Length: 113
Length: 113
Image (cartoon, rainbow over all chains, first blue to last red; front, side, top):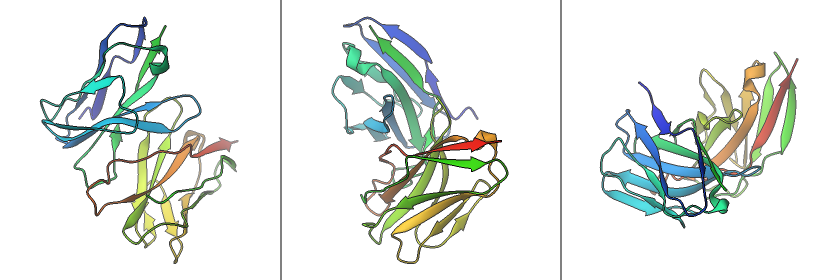
């Protein structure tokens, strides 16, 4: 099994551009989420989903959009990139919403100029 | 969720046991203690979790005090590959929000020769 796969691993954007970070898992997990991590800080929750068709906001949702049309995929969209969104983004999944055992992807490093 | 307090950094000699403390004095009865680690630039990795009994798996042991106000993660024979940031997280599983983990800044463990 591949686990949680994120693409791309690295991306450079200009201010105002849009892009989508992809996240896919092959473990049939119901719960998926996106975190961002800035230097010297812990991970902050952006958005999460408890199943296909259901999404909700986390701690820092502004400037990001998500959808969950399938169990496997949970893309994160940056609508109009800003330098403040320069960060490392991690996707995570778990079997369901009741377990704290998360499986993380390897991260996507985004730089907004 | 109960707040956790961890030392900012610790050192450990390779081959020796690494004991990482965590204080969670406001923990409530239905909250579990989770431990994750993050090796440089990688996604966090689940290590272990427990409620009130001591737990052991192939990676580590978790010792929770009888009053549950603190815990210790033990890596019995630390290696250089255990150098990472270790996160202690307290989370309730009863409310169905267990997967919404909040990561603080953790303890940076440096294993040396």
